[in-house]
Length: 101
Image 1 (cartoon, rainbow, N blue to C red):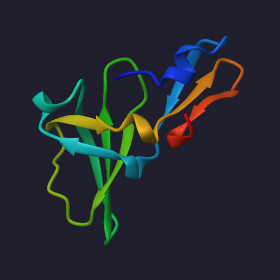
Image 2: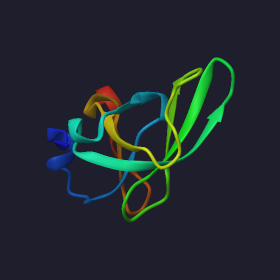
Image 3: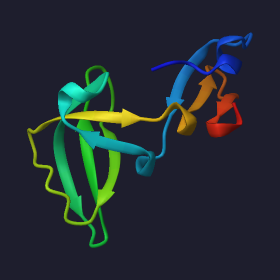
């Protein structure tokens, strides 16, 4: 994923990347840079929360449409548009917030 110009020129180094669950798209695993394994799906009527295990971290939660057909142990890609990313420094200060970068 490309880091926004404003973040790249920041005096602070990027420590954390934040993306809201509704701004991540599940795809076939070979379609994206970030891939993982579905560990749990939670059907909530009009939406489905899909928990995806990626190497080296907490599961990533993706908000998909209701009735989504993703299954546990399924390999998936995670599509993330940089326009919806929030970048933070180690002290928690925002470096770039979504489209404002």
